[in-house]
Amino acid sequence: MSEDDAMDDWAAAMAEQAEEEGAEGKAGDKDSEVSVAELDELSEDAPITQKEKKKLDTILDIPVTISMEVGRSHISIRNLLQLNQGSVVELDRVAGEPLDVLVNGTLIAHGEVVVVNDKFGIRLTDVISQIERIKKLR
Image (cartoon, rainbow, N blue to C red):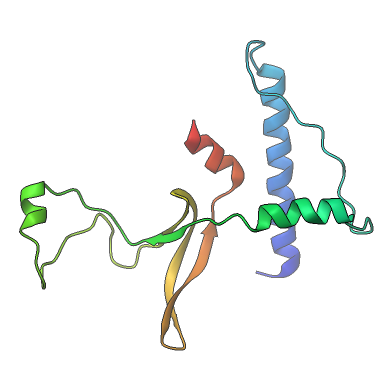
């Protein structure tokens, strides 16, 4: 996929999101606590002030836990206590299925295992959109 195709897909997704937000705003309930935030337009030309940089640095230093989940299994405590070296636990995933990438327990992406310089890593294959993540919170 070329960079232009990726940008076209991104633009289409953003337009779709804007349409959905517009439709939700019109069809929304008056008792709803959701409101649209007014944001300033970002510009590459606008320099970041020292105050803004300090705020950004504060956010960027917040630690999060990122984990990769191969799969899950539900077993009884009896079976858990019988596990020992060499035991095999069957997971709910099919071999070759993408791993889940979680940040603080929230699914943010899917990926595949890679080996780089004798260390395991993960290549992200699909990043979950903000809209999908918000829908899962409901």
